[in-house]
Length: 140
Image (tube, rainbow, N blue to C red):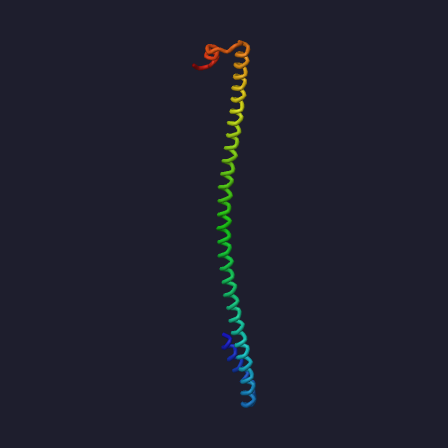
């Protein structure tokens, strides 16, 4: 396309030149100018192609890194969810253990009161004999 335009301009300029020698000089200068512009354009195109390739490579690299980071984030969310589940499980175990502890404390307190009542009754009876101990026991 560019070459066709250059050739068209060259042929048009030949029509306006009066002498052949002068026309050839003008034609050569115009041809050199157009060739130089063409070379500059081709060089610029090549530079832009290289830049486009570099940008595309950078884009792929960034996308790859984003995928890796996304995978790590998903993994960390899963780990966090599992940790929260374990945390909740442990909290429930603590609540259950606390209930059991309170129940055991109450049972110990009740047992202590029973033993104190028995000892008080045995003390009030005077000397302790074998039959007194057997009759005071809940089971034989």
